[in-house]
Image (spheres, rainbow, N blue to C red):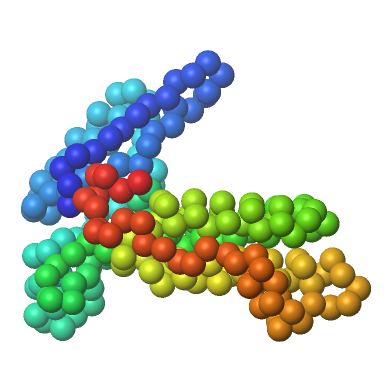
Length: 208
């Protein structure tokens, strides 16, 4: 885990409760982590602030923990979410330890709901206009989430968007659109293929 952390407190006029960015900290020993947690709570308390009770937790994470659990054939280390990714311990094809990332489940669900809502709003706009907008959505999604370890989630997102487009087009016509007709339409208006935009897994502090 990276030693770089970023915390920003916001106290704009009219904001009654200051907000802070998510904070991830890494320690070599559990003792250091627990001492830091106590110190952080005390420090925030002086400013009448508090850590989120449900989101603040200590987990075992990293190469040494993963190797130890792998040797004992026990469960993988815990996972955590940060900057839209779920981070988890994994192994490369040649056996090296790597921190892998996949799109956080809640982010995927929320984004697909937004896409569905917007598609319904655009239901009767020209297909060319819908296609242009969907292409921008998919390219933007891949531009941020396009990590090698995230390929399954990326491909699943593309497929979900494609299916939602089909359902919207099917609803706007009295003559129900078939999958064969939709596939023919995709040949004329192809959606972008799933694309890895970050060939290497980037360090934790630089994700996004």
